[in-house]
Image (tube, rainbow, N blue to C red; front, side, top):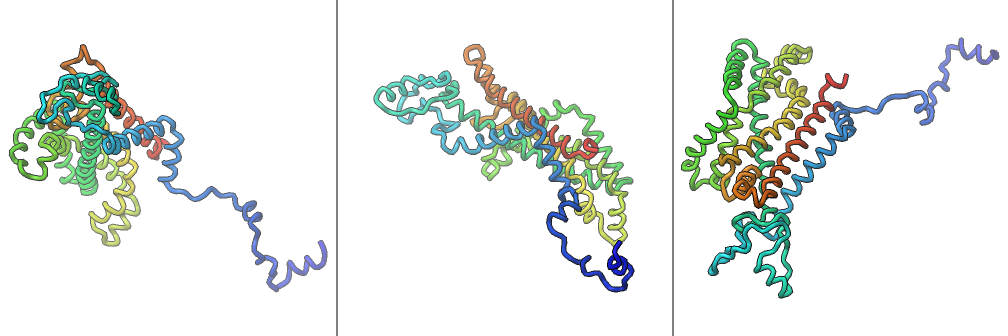
Length: 356
């Protein structure tokens, strides 16, 4: 070791060379750190890597966009009977057309040089374009599933959070109510409630804004609000029970924070992954419930179509026009299967217990 180095080491003076800024190459060599991320970003990365869930999400998006935008430019309306022209006798040649088949009137117009848009799925027994009815039915089913899940989310999250945080007698009373609702036969209660509400809501909403929605759809929302929130409430209650004893909750209590503030600011944000997964799995359940209620005549009001009502109407001509049953059945199966697979992918991506 040279003498200058020895003197520099034992010197009382500050070595200015130590304070020279490191270059970017030196920083990259010395500091080997993972880029900063969040729980949500990590979950999205895992979700994208899940090919089945990602493809299911793409299918859901495509079906939703088609249900929203196709009616904007489609030349036929879902409730227009093509053979019924005011002032003229009913043209029965529009009824029960097969896919891409034209009526006699349309064939004459085509022969005269006019351009007629084809009936992709044919027409039904009333001469209405079947493709646009399937599209509208998909829109109705998706809307009912989405809004029903929002209702279940609001009621179930509120009840479960209050029950889990308060505990004691409040938790006991709420959980006994949940147990009573759980003990009721789902299918029977849904049919009974839908039947009763269909008769009572009709006269009550006549002449109001809700009349345009229809008593059957409103009764569906009430059925979901009465019966289907219990699973969400139980799930949120279990999460809150495990989180309310954490140190940050005790610190918030010690600082004088109220129960509502703690639930809103601390507990529910830490349950968001579970809430997202539950909502994603609730939507296909709501769509399936709406479909079978419409199939038995307790769903959406005619002439507005639903996938379930379309399948029900197709029963009359099942031997001759089986495709009318197959098409809405395939759409229902595709929507429900895609939502279930996407919900499973969300659970795998955002459940911390599955990623440890």
